[in-house]
Image (cartoon, rainbow, N blue to C red; front, side):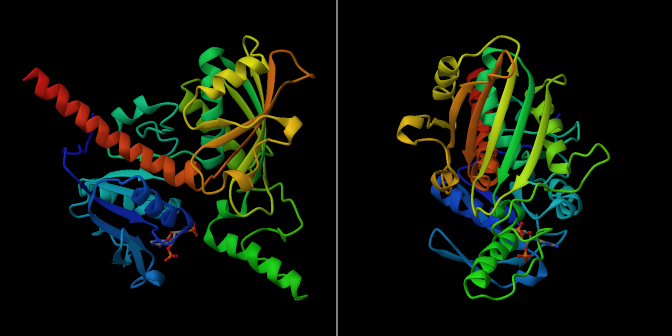
Length: 354
Ligand code: A2P
């Protein structure tokens, strides 16, 4: 049973929480690009950003400090200010009547909260009770590719190593990598704050905190969130998540063990017909997915598709996608678009029944 319902309107009152962050800025960009029907737009961040100005569709908006009373009259609140802000403020948004699409991990595994990738499980949006969670970015990118395979043959296991860009750790982390480049070029000392180690000229096999089983939080998100989104509590995902000195777009090397064999030819066909994916798989011409080609784009690129020679019924592929767009902001806007489209469908059903 939904707590909050959207009323069908020409345009909606939208709030962005974390509007000054890497995802928040991209949310604005995508809402404008996709002509999301906005009536009132409210932009929130911390006290530090209060008074900053942002331009959206040619109009200047002022960033306001987020408070418990920020959601009066808001229909849709897009949260991207980290888990603790979501835990604290999302309930206030719901109480004020808004539907929250939350980018943080705060509610992802809560059984009363749908966890949605629109290309994979759009039907789950219908049972929200005020909050819908956006999955972890590496999980979204992987699942856009796993879904068409799964629809052809059940997936038993996934072995994945990720190559995650600096922007996944936020705007300040991206700035740290740029600063390390400048410091190195001018012969200055390289400073490290956001990452555990120098990222420039390095690869750091550590994202999120280590758990008792030796995996990190990010790696366990890929395990747990895949099960919830795919509605399959037997699928096993073993991930190694790695930070690399790239600014935008995450890449992943994926091996998928399926119940029935999926040949590379079949996989190419399945990927080519799937939403949100583009097959870039022509090694002879040096064409394969790369972060420089997927950054700032909406589609994930999939390639290096081949049969795994170490194990039967196992397919290997390489995928790259802009994790700020498809892995976060775009996915959230797609959920919001589905919410308002479902509104239209529901009221059309009502009209034709009455
Ligand atoms: P601010 O810029 O004022 O710190 P990123 O993940 O790219 O670092 O972005 C985090 C976003 O979350 C920013 O917009 C940041 O705002 C916002 N944020 C961080 N802490 C708070 C807070 N206590 N209240 C509201 N917004 C916050």
